[in-house]
Image 1 (cartoon, rainbow, N blue to C red):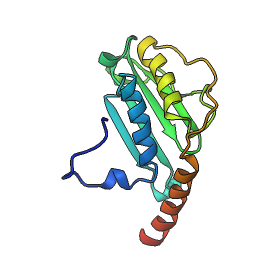
Image 2: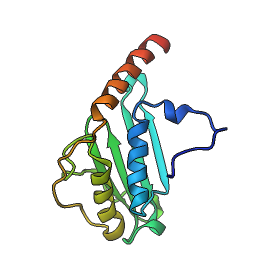
Image 3: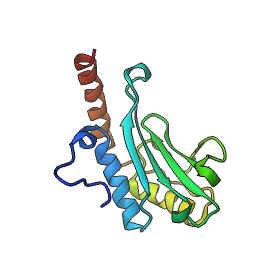
Image 4: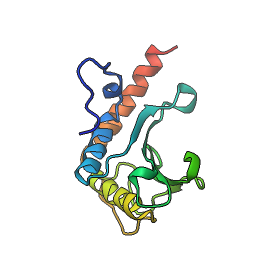
Length: 154
């Protein structure tokens, strides 16, 4: 598993309410032997509603295409991807992954879509309509996190 930091690293990432989803997706990608080179998980600031997100990135050395890939996840809109050309610049705006029908798609479905992007550098096809089994718990944790932030952050 890529994301389990050693014990001396601060626990901040693990305090994010969507961290279990980040870990589950990372584990699914690692099982497919396509771990991303970069993982970023965080939340927007108060001015943007404390929305949870993650970005997974594969540079050109980790893909079969002519560039890299970024998978973007946002708790409300779900999954999007961007193809990355030379100079680490996106070749266009992120495109929604229509095949993943839930914001909290199962990690296995996310890995299936990522596998196609990383290995073939093509748009994902198919229909992936299952929702992650812990989605409701994670949504509740996100809601509690926002309440906590409202009361603790001035």
